[in-house]
Image 1 (cartoon, helix red, strand yellow):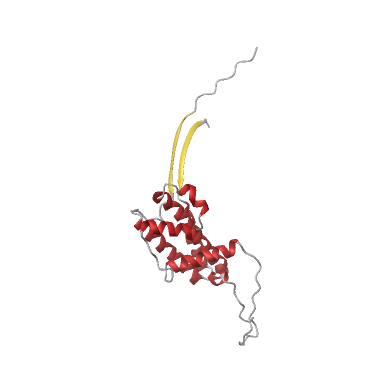
Image 2: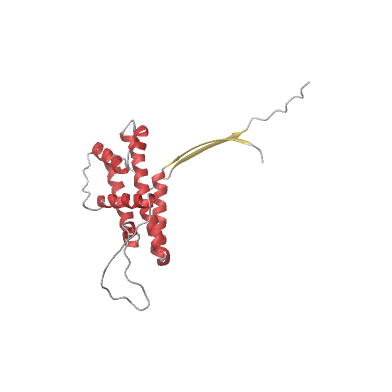
Length: 196
C-alpha cells in the first residue's frame, strides 16, 4: 500500500453526540425493564451533559469572549448569560425549564457523590416475599423511565427554544459536525547518500 499525504479537518458538535447517547440510553431503558434503572440514570446524566455542551456550542456565537469565560461559569450561570443576551426569561417553575434545575442537581449529586444515610419510620403492609418501601436519595428519584423520558423531552425543548431565538435555522440536535479530508500522493522519500 503506497504512503499518501492525508490532511483532515473535523468539527464535532459534542452536544449532538451526547444527545444521541441519551437517546440510545432511553431506548435501552424502555426496551429492557431489567436494566432500566441504570439506563434511566444515564439518560438524565447525558441530558445534563448535552445542555452544557449546547451552551458551549451557542455561546461563542453570542459572546466574543466565550472561550475565555466558559470554564469559570457553572451551567446555570451560562444559561443566565445566554438567556439575557437572547431576551429569554424562562419560567423555572414549569416544564421544560423546571427540568433544567433537576438535571443539574442530579448531575452534581452523582459527580460529587458521597455516602448518604436515609431513615424512615412508617407503617405499611410488607409482602411476605418482598421488602418494605426503601427511602430514596434525591438523585435516585430520577432513575425511572418516566423521569428519563421527561428529561429527554424537556432537554430537546430547551435547546430548540434557545436555538430558534439565536436565529439558527437548522435542527440543533441533528448535525454531528463536519469532516473533510484531502489525500494526495506523498513526496517520495529519497535515499540518503552514504556519509563519507
